[in-house]
Length: 354
Image (tube, rainbow, N blue to C red):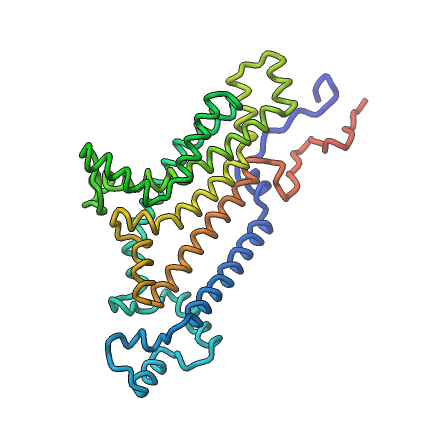
C-alpha cells in the first residue's frame, strides 16, 4: 500500500494477453467465416458465368476436331457436362478442395501446375509495385497534409492526379521509351534470369504498377493528417510547447494508422487486378498474361481457377486489413480489456482503506 492509499500499479500484461484482448477468438472466427462464405459465393458466380456464357464448352474442348454429335456427347460425358448445373459445381468444388483444378484445354497441363509456375513472378511484381506505392505515397501524403493549401500541397496533388489519370499501358510504354530505348539503363521486357537480373527486369513494371495507386494513397494519407492536426489534443499539445516532431509522431501519425491501413488494403487489391495490363506491356509470363491468353482461347478450366485465385487473394488482403485495425487502434477492439489485479474500471470508485 502506498502513501496515497491506492494499491501499486500492476505490471502490463504479456503480449499474448494483449493480442487476445485486441483480437478475440470469436471475432476472428466470425471474420474467417464471413470470408469463407464470400469465397463460396464468388466461386459459384464464376462457375455460373463461365457455364452459361455463349458458346458450347464441348465444342471448345474438341478444338479443331470434327464436332459430330457422337464426339460432342463423348466429350460431355467425359467432362460431366451432361450433368445438372449444381452437380457439376459440387464436383468441381470438391476437386478444387483436393487440389485438382482440372486440365488446361490449350496446353494439356495441370491447371494447378500452370498457376504455380506463374504465381511467383506475379507476386514479385505486386511486391515491387507495393513498395513503390508505399515509398512515394506515404511521405508525399504526410508532406501534403502538413503543408495543406500551400504550393507544396498543390504540387503533390497535381503529380498524384497525373499519375492516376495515366493508363498503365501508356505509362509503361513511356518508361520503356525513356529508360530502355533512350537511356539504355533498364531492360524493356521479359522476366530476366533470376537474382539481380530479375530485379532489374521488374523495376519498370513495378514503377508502372505502383504509380497508378500512389495517388490514392496520397489522398488518403493527406486527408487523415489534416483531420488529426485539427483535433483538440494535437492543438493542446502544440500550445503547451511540445516539440512538433513529437506531436507528429506520437499523435498525428498514430491517429492516421486506421485510414492508412485501409488504404493499403485497397492498394493491394488494385495491384492484383492491375497486373493484367502491366504484364502484357512488359511481356511478363505471370498470372495476368495467362488470364488474357486463356480468355482468348476460351480455356475455361484455367479462367475459372485463376479468377477464383485472384478473388481469394483480394479477400485475404481485406481480411488482413480488418484484423489489423484493432491492433493499431484500441478504440476498435470488440472485446473488453482484461482488468489487471488491483485495478478498477474508470467508472468504478476505488476502495480506500482507512
